[in-house]
Amino acid sequence: MCNLKVINLKNNTSPFRCTRLSFMSTKITKIDITNDKISARGGLPLFLRYVEKIGFYRLIEGTILSMVLRSNKGLQLQQFIKQILAFFMDGTHMASSHQVKRYFGKLSCITNLIFNKILHELFIWRLHITNPRVIELGADTMVLNNDSAVKREGNEVTYKRKKGFQPLHISWGPFLIDVLFRKGSAHSNHGTDYMDRVRAIVNLIRKRYSRDVPIVICSDSGFSDQKAYEVFEQELHIHYITTGKLYDDVTEYVLDLPTDAFDTISKDKIVWHLVSLIALSIPISEIAPGQMRGSGQPGAMSGLKLRPLFENHTRGELTS
Image (cartoon, rainbow, N blue to C red; front, top):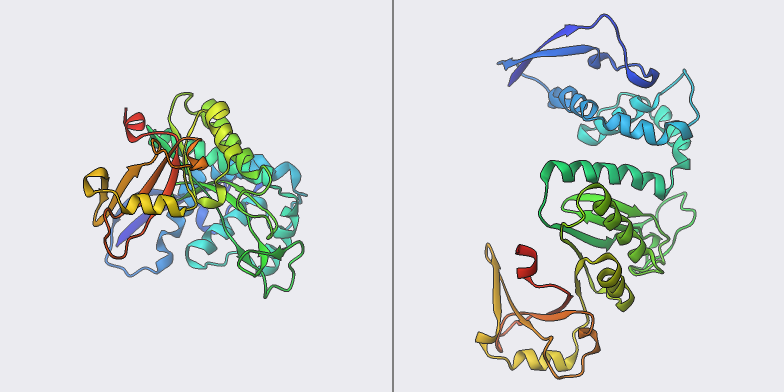
């Protein structure tokens, strides 16, 4: 347990004319050990103070404050953000549900472009903290099931046979760095969404972080597209790894390969055996964009699982 020594502040000031919450009107001067029992909310002021000091409130307010109808009465934007974050942490309510609902109504003007501007700034902030030598991105979709929702304007039937939406998101590790809200019938590689969002993220990295850092975009077979590969190679100059369709002739060829033909990659108890099919003479048009690797267990072992991967790089290119 820890005991926080605080002092009251005479001036209850806050940026952007927002009133501080009661527990935010004190200043932490010392952290010490205590035997007193504290509730699970004991760390909430520290968390909210951290969010304030890193400039998260300024980022949100600077991006959307001019678009929100402002009033000196009722819930302010900074208080609204604190309420949402506190609720996400432990379900704490610092504002009434009616206040929160009304403020969500004010934010109906927030579009994909505005929302992504906030995500992009957080992404660049984290990049400069961690300084990665290789940036590995992931692209995927998420089906939102709105079958039981009372209000579900604009939703459509998804591939999971549920009425809802299917946003496209690009992630970096555990963080979402770009999100495109879409209708439910929009599949993974719908239109030019995939290429457009990857292009936006790559240009952001090149402009705000590094012009030379290797970038790898990973995705499943829903994003396997020759046009996207051409954009990645010829325009953006990035690497990609995409799962693809497993053809019968590839399966037969891999099953007949000797054990020593496979390279091995292991992590913890998981072992992957890989073989490059780029030099094969069998007619596989999908090999053209880059390298294709059949991965699984070598030989004719029982329970063999094969997965083709399309890629345009080798491990040596990235590690060097």
